Length: 154
Image 1 (cartoon, one colour):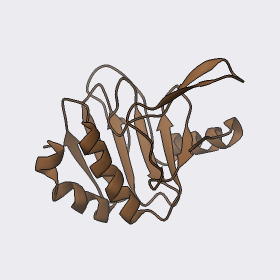
Image 2: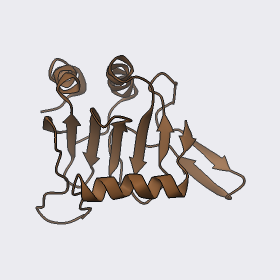
Image 3: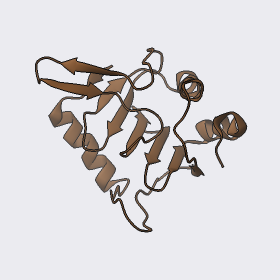
Image 4: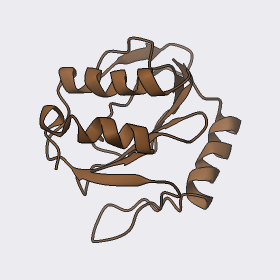
């Protein structure tokens, strides 16, 4: 896991804004993102448990070659591999910047959390205000569908 440099992060956010029409808002009924490939929206009222986070990570570990992006709107963004073990709610103090760094969870706990593989074929996108999880990519959707009970999603 490493923080994405600002110049690269800006390019990635531009892709989200321009290609995916990411429109962050916190109130009202609105379309906040447009996914250009197969996707499915789920609703979940509570954050994932540690076991659910690990299950989701296992899906990504199986489907994704190695590198993924973790976007946390208004916060640091990361590259990481699902093969890494990153504990749920992981944080550390960055002595160079004198601030705490938080790695996002697959559930959007207070802000938009967006995860994409480096080819943008698979993704998990979360909106905390709508309590909405959008899963992107046919094979990842199939894994969520076959684990709906374990993930407590509808």
